[in-house]
Length: 456
Image 1 (cartoon, rainbow, N blue to C red):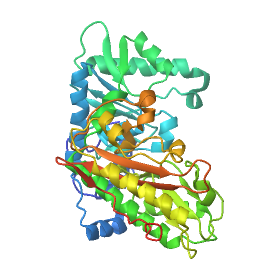
Image 2: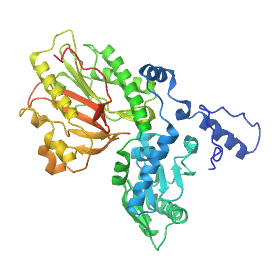
Image 3: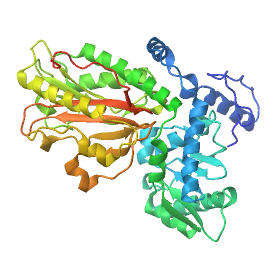
Image 4: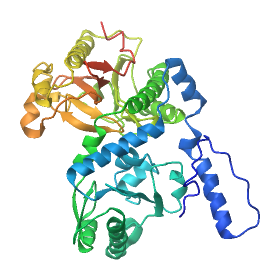
């Protein structure tokens, strides 16, 4: 479908609604419908008065979205040139969001591969979208063409999957050859995620594939100032949502009651989804990774949670806090566990600086007491952007099994993790901060206060 805004992009947000053309032919009605739908796109309308008011009070300016989008696409293309491939085919909704800022039913499309993007190294950017969804990306300048996607997963196509995969591959191979300056008998492209039928279908059409996951992770790892501005706003929205949770917390409510507040408040501020349900109380806090349940929260419990919140602009706020449920005072053991987690978080933030290797960071990071080590978190640090991402830096004892080296550079954003719970213990404490690697050291981006009844 032709983009009605192509060549004449409007900068008004929201777009002015078009006037109905009246009783005319289907082409005119289709164009009217597309412009009307594009004018009412959620990203065009914006995040609303509540979020904007809170951001203004925090002094958080808006990112330049056009500049941010161009930076991200340039990062992808620089990696493509390094790999010497014709381009990259993206299916992962987070990678599509990063490369072209296009969204559509993000979680659903994660397990129903109906939309995909082709980014030529030197050529067009083409988006194939779900049925009648072309209007969702008309506001995006970097997309050259939008087509109707050809799915070939079983739910949508049943036993016709091989036929549909072949049809998909023929169209894609034609685009690759005609629009990417590909030379030679076979083309070579990168792909982030692709089922086996697609690999074989492309190979049959003269297209060889190589892994594009590393390319995208490395491209996403260094943020521009506009990305940091977007992330600061997402964190601001998350912390405002946490405030509503904190005010509501009390004995007698369930874990699900409390967790639902974070979801609702995130959506109110233009947030998109939450990747996990990591909230637990009392004995469910040890060991970690219990998701929220119908357990009733009791006075004297500790409640621990990990936001994993994808907020405005698609940027993630991944922070953890542990609270005491009053009016019962904290026990000596609760304060000790909290103190150990605070000590680990503080120490492991203080050592961050550009130029430090992942291996060095793992080896010098603050460790846990022996009776808490078996329950340690899965990593010490991890990257954060549109979601959890590269790098992942494990504990020293896990290095041989999962560690890999690299180097901290300015513009990386990380989460610093701590979970402290004794093996066989009753409760545990989860804390996490989101930070930015600067030219000279580190800046902590999250600022929600720790529970003073435990932090003593």
